[in-house]
Length: 216
Ligand SMILES: [Zn+2]
Image (cartoon, rainbow, N blue to C red; front, side, top):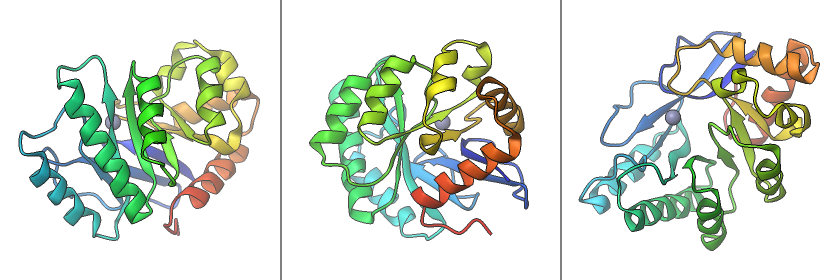
């Protein structure tokens, strides 16, 4: 089975394809199940308390199996203190609900780490769309976090990341791209010298460890 851990364009699920659709409060409707739901740093409402209340209500649905994507983005105009506040309150929510958290991070890894530690995060953390180098990856892995790699790996940069990332901390994703998840699996398998079956089996194990959700 292929698992796409973070997509904005899920296709129909089947025995060989599972996608965790990502929904953004104030932007998407709860159309896909299962899904993750969060308040994206690009879309923080003026009335954040009301937006958070909407998120809490959506999270009561058992098909919602993760909090996020949420996080910090230095390339976006949302005021920084609002981003940090929204991120930390969603970490608190994930802790309270005991659900994994899916993190959006753009040029803010140090600040994301600070928030995750300040909030005493006790749930699994998946840093989605990771495309930085192996050195930074080692720091993040040291904290116990998972890294989800996407279409960026096909550019051929950071091969040492693909060759060294512990397989039990890996997820793959398509995010907002139209690429097939099978193409990302194939590229990773080639770089890591794994069979498709080995990688599929490993990521199913990772999924089962992190999520309280039965794939079959
Ligand atoms: Zn996304």
